[in-house]
Length: 365
Image: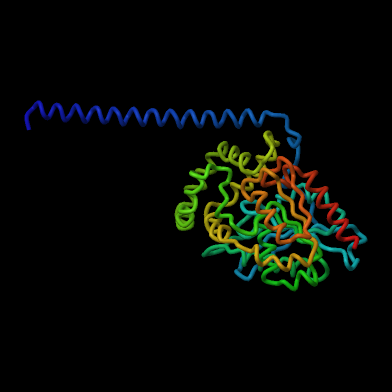
């Protein structure tokens, strides 16, 4: 190789290095601009007038706190709120049992707890891997196990007498799993059921409001996420905590339907989301995406059912609630305008009114 050939080769290499450097520079500038834009948007959103700016989210009164251990050795954190004094010894007065959804905790029912306190005996608990409950030591979480966990909570907190089951999202699926496992319970003790923003299956077909060409790539990634969860969860969790502004924006986008939801409310839901570890999330994915109970909802036909869903829910879309309504033709359906996935927080007054009207009618029989 001549000296001129070497010079040409070195010159070509320098151009490539320079090009790569330019590309990396542009990419870095783009990332920096994106982060700056993200922070600006969050800061601007949080400066908006906020009706819940002084709300003490996650702070409630309760009369009893206990731990219920499931068959797979998970300790569930449970709180009991007593009803009116004259209900203490009254037979036939139901206990309301609230079951929260994926990546949330019992705080999901913050406004329902406040509205119904003093009117009914209520039970709240954190599902496995969520809130203050324990985690599965190994393996994947299953809806069958969640159904068994709900049964254990019922046995510990309301061993006799009627109950009303109220579930949001995965909590509704937990109730469906319980109905499949113990159908006779819906003949003898379950007085009514409220299902909020939930699904009886086909979650693997939800596009989360994304274009179909983008959404189709999520399915091949699910097995990878399941395997990577235990390995990379620590790294991902640190990244999630570092990207709080992005997490806030995503929570607003996917949890809410109104254009300008309460910033404090978004922050409250975002805190519940990010508290759920990546490892827990990964180990729940398979059971959620393979959930299929539309054909086994028979036990729910035996009790009054209230279905509630926001018309802008992109996680468990209204079409899924309508599918449940088609199988349960006697069920009452309430569609909340501009409601997202956490409709019972976003439009608390409407949801509370629907629940209280339903309970008055059902329990006065």
